[in-house]
Length: 102
Image (cartoon, rainbow, N blue to C red; front, top):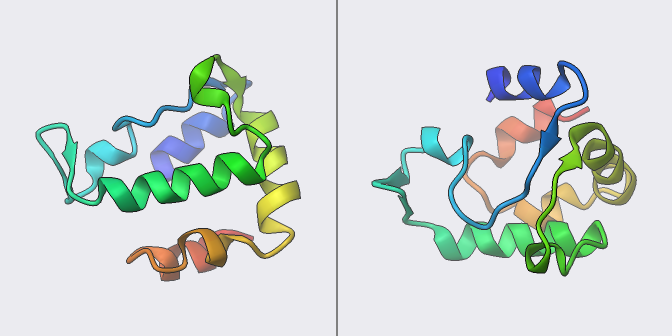
């Protein structure tokens, strides 16, 4: 995760949000043979995030978004308002994120 974040923060990286497995999922022990055993849970998290960011219809027209803008929106509409725990507080990695997110 640190390498991915470092790469995203290096320049003006463009990303495309996906409802399928991605670079982060590929390192999860619950993601085997391109299938997530917690797909319902991760979709629930994704849907909440997109809704809070005002991107509900994003998957209808997926397009690159600068990581810096996505980070700004996330800080403004999720992290600064204390929504991280409401979105994914039941995730087994939540305690790690709690201390990593400033």
